[in-house]
Length: 554
Ligand code: SF4
Image 1 (cartoon, rainbow, N blue to C red):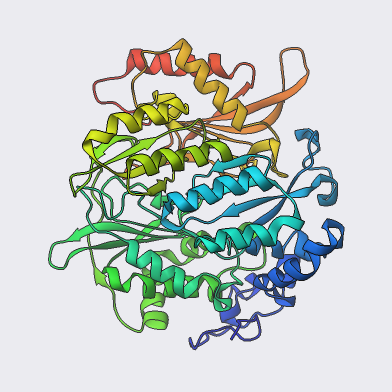
Image 2: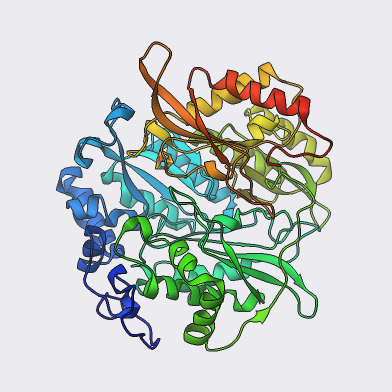
């Protein structure tokens, strides 16, 4: 049965209304919607919009779409309206949503664990060419995003995706989003534990399930047993990180409450060790807490991180154990410091079965349908038909015989996909930006790509791991706060007093066991035109002054 605000789908005993009654928490008896989003979710489950898309909107066209579906429930199926071309960033905050809306959509395909077959990749590429004007971006959550989608084409796109086992279900919206997973799960020589069975079970139990389709906001998750800490676990609402327990063996360390955006918080450890077969139950407990106790009054305080910050890890673990799991969790160790800085699996690596996997990079995750189709062809010719997306906007081909590696590398390089990229191509990510995003203030993807090319030309000798993340607005879709150089898009005045695109600079952020947010350098803003000069200066100084082994963030 569907959960409704009046009837939360849980048998959990309810607490008395307390000081958080005003936060709209269902578990303390507050069922009256306190904002427009809560109201439309109460009026009708977001999952139900699919039927209207198939039977009404795709047949009658864009103008027939109910506004609450258009800007609300369609997200439950991975659809966002995209930004009308030609509207500059200065108008983002002043125009009404309908003035910013184009009559086309962004459509996100969820790729749980980043796992794809070449057949699936080929279909993704074909859809891009046929319905999305060739667009296809690799996101930093292992998804693929299309643009220029017409509502009329959505049912056919779903049919083709679902025919090969892919979907857009809950790819956006206040839902359990894609489950990040180590892209080398099951094959890496140094893997602690393969989380794939847990990802599959979480998908089966929780995705598209109306009991969990009305959350206070999005719920981001990650499961990885890689010692490289390769899924940015620190910035997910829930993360399971591979560890070896001294008595019980391989399992997962449980983290909750991470998230970036305008009020960033790193996830916290609950000090609990979770065996593989219990991961889905623990996921269910944490998402249940979020649904029932999560704040629903203000969208800006609705992510799980705010509840975790208010409760603290001890109380959160106690509620999880007592009210949801009905048993105690086992105490466990923290993850160990990874042996290397890069987390992306680029390059050529031996698998535990003796074959090889090969990771490669486009620029800032920007590919296109034709390139994806060609990647599928090259991967099929050299591997077993398995590919992966990473949480760094990159891809990997699996299962390559040793004698096939050189030929695969040559095939990828011929597509301008680098197996041994410069640190700039390797470490630069960019969000969607003003090209398609309605919240954007500045350009990001093209800027990031040209910055990579410029830095490769200017400082070809630079060879240290570096991350440069570019966002088009104060949100954090490209994780600016945890980059060595984080660039937050904003408008500013240039030396002639003209309003131009630029970036607020954050320096020295990091993920990993030394994770922390970059310092916002007071008053340090650079215009887009000055950006290559600025980054070149910062990296040049770092290169000259760094001590042996010193990382940019230290
Ligand atoms: Fe859009 Fe801002 Fe996210 Fe970039 S960071 S994709 S501009 S919301």
